[in-house]
Length: 484
Image (tube, rainbow, N blue to C red; front, side, top):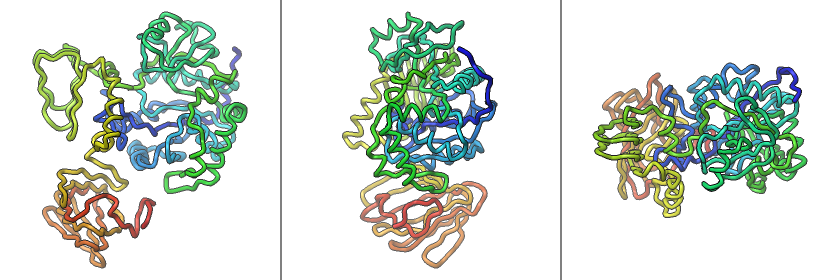
């Protein structure tokens, strides 16, 4: 295929970051899923942060567009600030509608910044071991995308994987031939089919990474998925800016079909092509894949946290708080958090998702929420809860504050254990230092702020006949949250 020289088009990364990450429970939960966690032995960045950082050095790279949901919006914004990255926008989806609507929204929004940019579609939860080779493949993909191709990136399989979708190519793919037009997309196969695919050079894993010009994908959306395109245009027209975020119109978006870009466009277009991606790619879809990609000791064990082992082989053990002791065990996954422990055979980790679904159906809170909850001003951790009282640990970021608020059903005590606090109770303002406390009577307007340059840590004791988070009446808020 004839390739033109790079026309210096602007390249906008589009990072899809709305997933719930249930297959890596109990560490990953819908309130704080895997893309915001660190699984990389080489650095301290989250999967989301690494998704953008590994792009540094690609020519004409622009600020990213990120798609997230309402619940995770401040986590996304904070993690981008931590790596000193300004976003083009963070589009908030009121509910997930799969990749076709998400990609369409991002493409339409990108035209507000540039006339016809190239869009690099990335999942926020992939691991790439060879980042230099990854960038070389992206640079090659740019040349094809400039020529009007919709480029996908396929991974040559090294095992009969049933957890990935596959792409069948027209030409055989190998180290010598890295490019082909696409024949068809194949959903996650059973083991028997996966074993045949690995022997055939026409099959590659579908990485879910795409590269195309905005005009190209919009033309194909108009041809093959006009309903999605129209509803996404209307959702943006009726949406509104909110701080770092763009809120699409919920009522319009609700009508949008729930369909992947593979089904909506890629299975129908004649513009689809695939480049082989040989860069140590993994979508971190299970605890087994975490073990496979982690550093191991001489016995094949990957350990993280407070771990003591004797006679243990080929295990993944992760302790968040408590000590784990493993004696004469083999081929196990053991993950401990402050409110749940997972113990399973390493070859059974695909069943974790099913267990989480059962937890949610049974309304068991550990299936969805951590004890630690994140807010734009910091976080709080539930230490102990009873019917009429509970104890929390609050951490307020420097120069941040909670909303000016009141409660109908509870009073509160705040005890400063680290830092300096600014306290407003009705019309009175005071400052508290370490080991000092304040009492907030039921019904009082109050606000807690951190005027310092280091985190403020408090112990909060709540007392009342109802302790739910919905007993908050807001009067002022620095983060654009709903007022009562």
